[in-house]
Image (cartoon, rainbow, N blue to C red; front, side, top):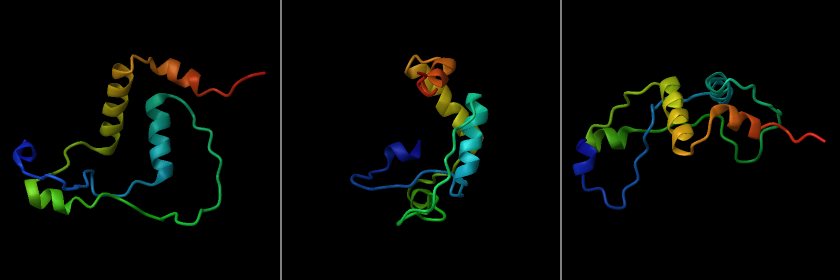
Length: 103
């Protein structure tokens, strides 16, 4: 809660776990959490693609003591729970929306 009292007008802070997650691991985690297999189409790297990226949280840690407490998988689970409840969408309905059109 220290962050709420911090005067940070017009400041930008990276928040995250400060560790990279491979895209294929993100996709796999989402597949497991949602019970649906992703339709992956592998493509060549595009100009400007970066091989690795992650949140540098050193500024947030120094400014207001930010320290991640939620793991990657738990964060995905919490996000999906929030998303489904806030949008009033059942996970099965979301999966059905992702199905390719037939006909």
